[in-house]
Image 1 (spheres, rainbow, N blue to C red):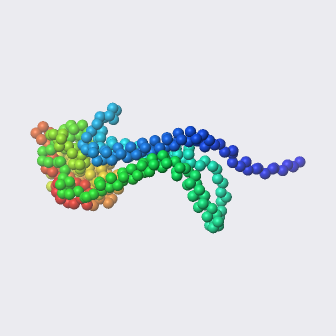
Image 2 (image 1 turned 45 degrees about the horizontal axis):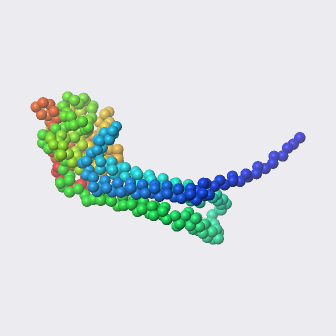
Length: 331
C-alpha cells in the first residue's frame, strides 16, 4: 500500500486588518494632534537645553529628593537633550504606525541588477509612497516636525562653542597653593596621614576657605589621587621622594594624554590606568608612562603635613595638569 503526499500550498498573506485611523477621520485627526504634540514637546526640550546652556550658570545647584544636590546647568542640558530626542523619535514612530500607508507589498527577489523598467517602477513607487504619507496635506504635522527638527539642529551647533579656543595660560592653573588642605571628595573632610593605610587610594580636592571661590572651570583640573605605599617600594629620584610623606604620594587625576579621569589603580602592580585610551602609569616611578599614548607622566603634587598631622600642599604643581597640547606653562 502506498500513499503520495500532496504538496503544501502557500497560504499567502492573511487578510489585511485596517487600522481605526484608516476608516475613522476623527481617529486620524486625533492621531495627527498626538504626533504634533510629541513634536512640540521635543521642541520645548531643545529650548530647555538652550536656556540651560546660555542662561544658567554652571555653579548653580538645586536639591532633588533622593538624588540630593544636582548641578542645575548640567541637569538642564541632560533633560533638554533627552526630551528633544525621545519625543521626536516617539512622534515619528506614532506617525508611522497610525497615519502612514499600511499596505502589504510583495516584491519578488531578482538576481543582480533589476531591469530598467523595474528600477523606474521602484522610483515611481517611492514617490507615490511619499505623496501618500500625508505629509503634504497634514500641515499640522509638517509644521510641528519642521519646528522640532529645526530646533534640534541648533543643539550641536550651540555646543560647538565648547570645542575652542584652547585654554590660555590663566585657564591652565589649578587651585592648589602652598598650605592648601587636602579634603575628601565628596565630604570636604580634612585628611590625616594616619587615615590612609598602605595600599589604599583616595580622590581628594583642595579645601576652599570661602565656597564662593569654588569655580567648576577650575576644580575640574584640581582632582588629585592619593596613594600610600611602603617607602621602600618607591623607585624615585631624591627630589621626587621629597615630595612624598611617609609613603603617601599625590598625582593629578587628569590624564596627560586627552584629559580623561585616571580612575583605575592596580594594587598588585601599583599601576594607574586611564580607561579612555589605556595609558598606564607606574606609581613607584613618579607615574612614569609605561604603556599607551600619554606623552608625559602625571604631574606630582608636593605634599606634607601641618602641626596637627593634616595633609597639605607644600607648593603648587610644578607643571601644568591635563593634556600635553594645553601647553607647558607652570601652574
